[in-house]
Length: 195
Image (cartoon, rainbow, N blue to C red; front, top):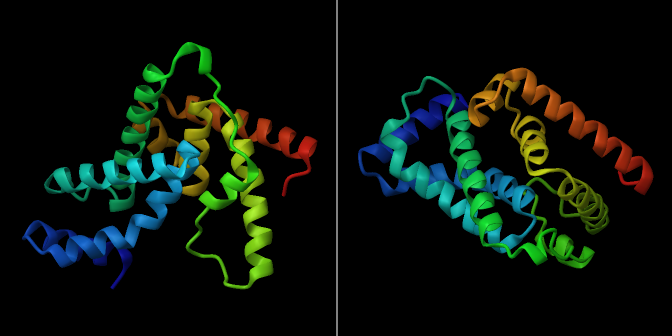
């Protein structure tokens, strides 16, 4: 059974009222959604809040999933919209004096990183956490739009067309934002010797 077939079976069962199928569907994607949320918010508490909003949105709209695209595409469209909404609320509630905010310490970032695919070797974990912390700091220096495009393209494997549709922009604009962000990241990595 392919991933798409498994998703379809879980979605059908969840729509018929199976709590177990819904839980399996959530467990199947919670790691990816959490990592998306953490990279977009840079904060564990906000990432958990965003993840909860995403799965509530999926639950409330599951009957609207028509299967025209892969479930992951639909899921991350919801995640994208919830992340934009959260960022908009956060921006509106942030006093002008604190725009830009205090940067997190390296220890705080290291505590927040959770990668479900890491090996259990302590040296590998430490090396990966240190690299992730550096990458997280660099991503946080990008504009929101650039960070979102990098997240969707690199970490969620969306096409430029899918990104364009999610953000209501042209595919060329999505490409421009992505390549501009990648150029900035490369320059910053060279300057800070990250990765």
